[in-house]
Length: 192
Image (cartoon, rainbow, N blue to C red; front, side, top):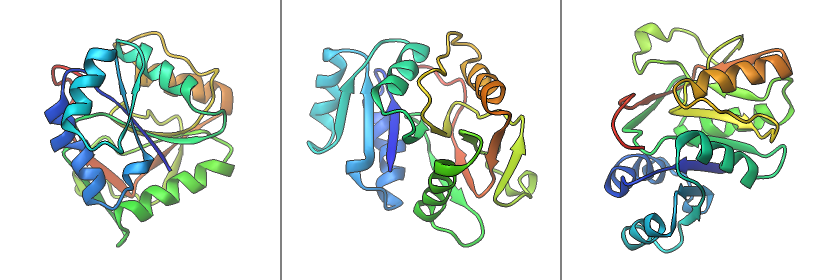
């Protein structure tokens, strides 16, 4: 499994939120790839995090780093993209987080569409669906899973998740929403 997380100037937020959520839910540290903007950021994160965590120097700026991550991995790899401030995860249908994450990654390896987003809410009352839905479903930027396609490059930081969704929809004819994982985060929080 490949998990890619961009972060900038938020060592303790990443460590206390996304990193902790992943480790506490059984994800191997070997699967986590943290992307930072420069050597200074690399050194700050390296000093606070376990030595075995992969920290990759990419580029500054959300669109730049997301494009860098896309180009970093192999064409066709299935990548879980997460923000650095995921506070909690919740699953449905008695699945563990790792089981649900593995299910969506395996599904994307052979599916006709290459992008799966999650429900835009942490509230199960508003997420009554189970499994996969397909159509033109926006993959919200805080957490999405994608079969890597290096031709999908975003250039608008304000709506980069919407732009990525549209590009995938135009190329593949649809996108997915995987309803069995929900995440809690604070959208539009400062930093990144």
